[in-house]
Image (tube, helix red, strand yellow):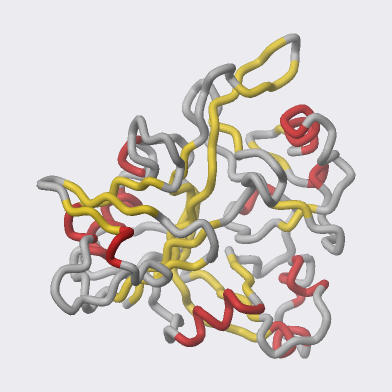
Length: 285
C-alpha cells in the first residue's frame, strides 16, 4: 500500500489566500476557483453557511460567491445536494495524474490531503484574518481508493451521480480520472468501523505539518520514521537528501514548493499506514 500526501485547497497561487482556521478550532479547506465548474461557492455549505459568505471577505472580493468552485476532493455528503449513489471522490489529470499512475497508485492506497490554513476571527460582522497570525500546512482529510475510473468511461454510463464533478467539465482526455472512495476504511490492525473518506473537523497539532515556529510553511516536522535511511526511497519529489534533517525524536523536511502528490511506499516505510490509521481514528480530537 502507498500513502500519498496530496496538496489541495486554497493557497497563495490558487485562491490567493489560505483556508480558514476558525476560533473554535474548526477547519475548512476552501476549493480552488474554477471557471469551468458548474458549482458556485454560494452552492456549497459548511456547517449551514454558504462558502460564498467566506470567500468574498477573505479574498477581499477577488473570489466571489458566484465564481466557479473546483470542489475536489469532494468528501462531505452535506456540502451539496446529492443524487442517489453518491460517494466521496477525487479527480486528477495531467502531470499530477501521470505521477500517480507511474507510481501505481490504485485500490487500497490512502490519500492524506493537506493545505494551507490561517486563523480567522469575526470583525464588524465579517470574517477576517487574525492580525499577526501565520499560515501553516495542516492535514485536513483522507480518502482510501476503492477504484480508479477514467472520466471518459464514467461518461458512458453508470456514474450519473458524479456528473456534477468538475472533472466532467474537462475536454476528453484519457489521463483525466476519478478516484472513488472505499465505503469503509480497510487498514491492517484496524479493529473498528471508520469511513473510507472524510475530513478532520478540527485542528490538532498532531496533524500540523509545518514545524512550530518555522519561518517558512514548507519547513515540516514529521515523525522520526519518515527519514529515508539506507536505500529506502524518499517521499516522491524529495529525492535530494539535503532536504532532509534527522533529529532524535523527529524528521525535518524542506518540502517541495511544486508538486501536488507526494508518494511514500508503505512496504519501505511500514510505520506509515499505522501512523495514518491513528490520525483517522482520532479525527475528532
